[in-house]
Length: 234
Image 1 (spheres, rainbow, N blue to C red):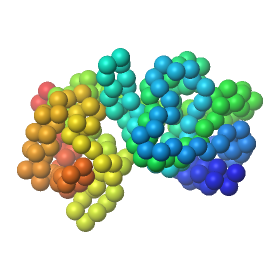
Image 2 (cartoon, rainbow, N blue to C red; image 1 turned 90 degrees about the vertical axis):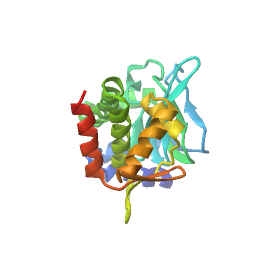
Image 3 (cartoon, rainbow, N blue to C red; image 1 turned 135 degrees about the horizontal axis):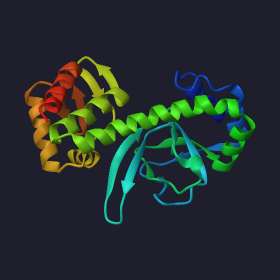
């Protein structure tokens, strides 16, 4: 029980989750449990029956869009995060979830959560508001991929990664998620060669630095301006 409560402190101290009452977290603690996952372990697959909802307490989760022959990293989640966002409709999982590193996840039965909201309807609005914010971020990513050219797609993805997973260092904002050109290409629906070429261009402009799988954004405002120039030229 102690690990459950400690984990939920991440949510309770986050501005996006603060409006939910303590009774909500007490209910979750009483009806679910923490599971420990190793790196590169699937939590669930696309199309599976949606029996559970998940609260990410520690580690990182890759959200994968999958077809019969391919899979693409759509998003990378870090704590505190709730997923899948649409599972309350009782349909199948809309994507697959894979741990990017060793992770602790609180797992709650979906039916139990739905029953809680039926008995406590006043908590549904703050819960929904947080989910809506998360979905807006996802829609922004879809827009960037669907409407942008290669440079604006990759630039927007790097900017989002720096915002969500960035850590300030003397050299700039370090994206703490190790990423290869192949992984970035999958996230942006681009060819690996195109990503490598654009990364080299950004490096030559002094916007970022690369060392193996580590990317540091040297000047976030310069990256923002570079993205806007690409988007305005479309």
